[in-house]
Image (cartoon, rainbow, N blue to C red):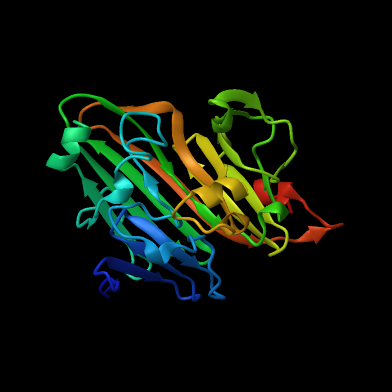
Length: 307
């Protein structure tokens, strides 16, 4: 069956992915960005800014899963989080070496360097993204190929804006005892002391050498997001809290309460590619129902699958 593509009121192409269970995802060619992921009960799992109606290209979209390439944040001379999220991507007709997919539940996108990109970042590349939807799971496989005649390095992140019921009721498991860089204190390095991370103020941290599995537990919704990743050793955690949310023009004043960014990233050590080498990053987001035992979720069940 052909790919299900619709055009927004502003003419931007949007791809609708569906799964037999009733779950769905929506992907814009602008930014190669997932902007919706709903479970089989049609509940939205990704956060989108309440001010999204005022968004117009070439501004980035606040919410969903933006692709940060070839620079994360302001760690370089390019625009914040790089230019990939502000470009119009194309459908990829040759996604090899990945196996072929079902057109209803998967899409392959590609972004190639243009003359305009080469002026600001003089390196020739191909950035590919495969987005696959399955029952209670959303998988993103990113690949960067160096099509230049000289090596280059880059940083990369998939910024996951997760929808939560109330940020003060959320805890994150799997990052305890790890070192992190605190972007609120000039990227100073600290070691996480808490058994689980909870939120009562602004947070902007890059956790280093993180495990391949992180759990984000939403007590109120009795739902846990499980983030699995490979090839992206770092994990970024961000919530602007009230003061910064008010200062962000593309974010509602109360939006911070219903979102948390937990990103798969490669930031501390940039990825280096020789000519015609390829890097691959894998991310899988899934949801599981949180089961309670004396009021607390046993995080080991989520992280390590104990039964």
